[in-house]
Image (cartoon, rainbow, N blue to C red; front, side):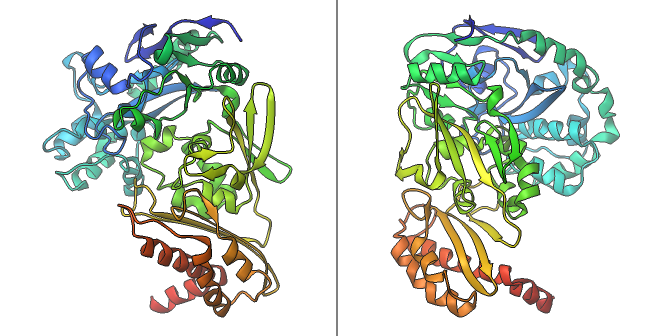
Length: 487
């Protein structure tokens, strides 16, 4: 293993912090409010849903220093090595003038009770630095992860669009002094793996993927933590002791996206937002679902690899990736193996993964010309909600005949699972509505869905059948024709 360091080093607002005694499960929100007495960030939900705790995390990415909004309530302090944490207090220090985003919120009545306001301001601040002249859609996307029960959002949207009239983004300290802040962050990098604490409070932050492999093989009981958008709730909601913890989000080798040999290879720590442009380029059918994977704060830190590794039956990425024929690379120590993604999921809470073995990369075949693909997410809320059902379809036709079709669903079984009986009922048949209707009963052979708080078994089964019909209509252009006729 590389040289070790026994402390975390990061910048909080304008002060460097060195920590060597923090609990493995200490959240950033508790650290800010209880340890640092910075109480602007609020705890509303403690599960990454309401956004009242939003802060910005800045990290050096190549030649750039990027700031992204995160939910401090489920973000662990152990993940902060080499980062710049910016809280609401830093926007207007020492009782100075309000920040342009804050002043716009005041003048345009964007706050009532005020509890959610700091988080909203921080989300808008992150957007404003990237896009100082946003349209309504951009503002709505930025606010997907922030809930407000008072204002109805219109005053907030108006304030976001007016912020630049209160100040030039070029004069903002995080923009004007970005080169200086970047150099401060680079000075914290020493190529060392962080390792401190004992037992369940041990924290390991690997400097490389080789260090990660060595640390996890030696400590297979440890919990790997990437974005913590799921793991965070194990601590804040279920009060589980999940240490020791190995924080992998900043392992550089896990962040690449490459295209070769007819497939994309995506590092396990690539976040949803990092992957968005590439995914949209190659699989535009995933655009709608991708923008509904939690709120912006979740997509900033949630990773494709962890969404797979958690093995949740309602994870959103496995169904489309299975339909596309994806595979994964698993690594234990220096040994690697590759297997089809659909073979990774064995049973509820059980994956084809040995102790000390982790997902290193995801390989997704490019869609051949002529193949058709669709993916649909069903949830109670349009945004920032867990799926009741997620279905994905990939179709290959020879003339008018189905030569191959892959159908995968999440939320229908104990694992993400293919509808092999439905597929068999379609292959070799003409791609017609009559064929679809004849295959519909086969769903009962593939799935016996459960009833829970998100949906009944009957609803899930009917919705899955209707999604196949929808895919048929979209693939044949019938849906567009009907839309034009109605219009």
